[in-house]
Image 1 (tube, rainbow, N blue to C red):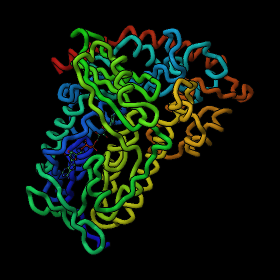
Image 2: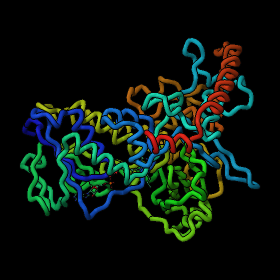
Image 3: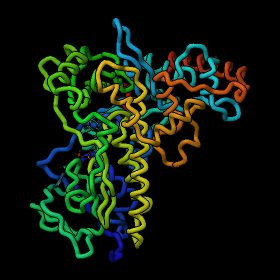
Image 4: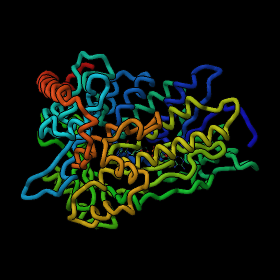
Amino acid sequence: MTERPINDILIVGGGTAGWMTAAYLARRLGSTRPDGVRITLIESSEIGIIGVGEGTFPTIQNTMRTLGVDEARFLREAGAAFKQGIKFIDWKTAPKDGIHSHYYHPFAQPRLLNGGLDLAPYWLMGEAGDIPFSDAVTLQDKVCEAMRGPKRRDDPQYGGPMAYAYHFDAGKLAALLRDVGKATGVRHLLGNVLAVNKADDGAIASVTTREHGDLVADLYVDCTGFAGALIGEAMGSAWIDKGDTLFVDRALALQVPYDRPDAPVATTTISTAHEAGWTWDIGLPDRRGTGYVYSSRHTTDDRAEQILRGYVGQAGDGLTPRLLKLKVGHRQAHWIRNCVAVGLSGGFLEPLESTGIVLIEAAAYMLARNLPRRGGMEAAARQFNAAMTDRYLRAIDFIKLHYCLSQRTDNRFWTDNADPASIPETLRDHLAMWKYRPPNVFDFPNLHESFKYFNYQYILYGMGFETRVDPAAHVHGDLARADFARVREAGLRAAAGLPDHRALLTEIHAHG
Ligand code: FAD
C-alpha cells in the first residue's frame, strides 16, 4: 500500500464507540492545533445507536480524566451512579426452597500479605474460616452490602478509598461524549454513508454520503455498530462467530422506575442467573436498567419475557421490553489497509463483565498512541490486530469461566456450558493448573490484560472451584490469619463510615 501521512481521520458512527474514539483521538492528537490531526465524525440521523450498554470498568475514570471531564459533570450529565463490581446471584446453584446463593466480583484488588504474598492459598487452606473469598480479601463486599458509595463527597475526583467505575444512561453518555468531542475539535456531520469507494491498492479512497457527497480521509474508523459497513461489507474482514462458546444471542431490555424516590441505589451490577441466561439490574439515580440476556437455542422469546417480568415484578407493569438480536464474536482483522474497526463493528461479547466499553477504550488508546502518522501503516495494523484479537480471546475465556463452573442442571443451557468441547483450550489449560494452585501473574503475561489473575480468583472461588494447595509451600498461616482479621475490621469501619450511595449521588448531582 502506498504510504501517505495521516492528517485526516473520518469516523463513521456516533454511538459510544464513535464519540469516545473521536474525543480521545482529538484530545491526544491535538485536533484544535493547526498541525494536529483533523477528525470528522459522521453519524446517521436515521439509524439509532444501540443505546443499552450501561456498565463500565474502572478504566473509564482514566478515559474521562483524559477527556478533561470533571467527575461531578460526568455523574450529572450521564445520569450516572457508582459501580463497585458485580453481585452474582444463583450462578453457582439454582435457587432451592427460596434459598439463593451469591458472591461478589469487586473491583478492589485483594489485599496482599506482607512481602507481596497472595492471600488466596491461605484462604483455600481455611485460615479465614468460612468467610467468602472476596469478603476475606477486600473491604468491598461489606461496603456494597451496606449500599454505601465508594468515596466521600470531598474526596478528590476520580478516586477514593474503594475502587469503582460507573453505571450510566447510554443515551446521555453519548450526548456528553458528543459535546466533549466537539469542544475538542471534532467536526460533526449528520449523514448516511451509502457506499465505500476503494482505490486500486484496496485501501479506502472515499466514502459516498447522501448529504455531503464524497468524503476523503487518510484513515477511516468504522464505528457503525453491528453493521460493520466499512470493515465488513467493504473491506471483507470475516466475522468469527463465538456462539459455540458463548451461547447468549438475544436480550430483552426494560427500563423500570423505582418504587419510591428515595429507594436505595445498588452500587454493583446485580447479575442473576436464570434457566437459559441471566438478568442484569443496574441502579441509576432516577431509574433501573434491567434486561434478560439468553440463548435462543435454549429458550423462547415468550419464556424469556416471562422470566424478565417475573424478575422485575410490578415495576414492569405496562412497560414493553425491547428485543435485541446479538451477534457474539469478533472480526478476523480489526484493521485492514486504512480502515480500523472500533466498537460493535469489531466485535461483541455479551454484556457479562461489561467488556464493550473496555475494548473501545483499549482500541482508542492504542490507535492514539501508535498512530502511524508518517508511515508504517501495515506494521501498525498487524500489531493492532494481534493485540485486539488477544484481548477478545482473553475476555472470552473470562466470560466463559462464569458459565462453565456452574453446578446448575435446570436447563441444557447450563450443562451445555459445562461441556469441555465448548470451553476454549486456553481456559481448559488454566483450569487444569488451577486445580493445584490459584491463578497468579504468570498466567497472564500480557501487560494490557483487561482481567487480571485476581479477577479470575474472585470468580473461581465465588463459584466454589476447588484448588488443592500444598500446605508445605505456604508457611505464613499466622500472618495470614492476622491479615484476614485486619481486613474484616477495616471492612466494618468502611461500611459504617462511607456515605449512603443514594445520599452521595443526590449531593453530587445537586452541588457538584
Ligand atoms: P452503535 O451504538 O450501534 O452505534 C452505531 C452508529 O453508527 C450510530 O450512530 C449509527 O447512526 C451509525 N451508522 C451505522 N451505519 C451508518 C451509515 N451507513 N452511515 C452513517 N452512520 C451509520 N458494553 C459495556 O461496556 N457495558 C455494558 O454493560 C454493556 N451492556 C450491553 C448490553 C447489551 C444488551 C448490548 C447489546 C450491548 C451492551 N454493551 C455493553 C455493548 C455496548 O452497548 C457497545 O459496545 C457500545 O454501545 C458501542 O456501540 P457502537 O458505538 O459500536 O454501536
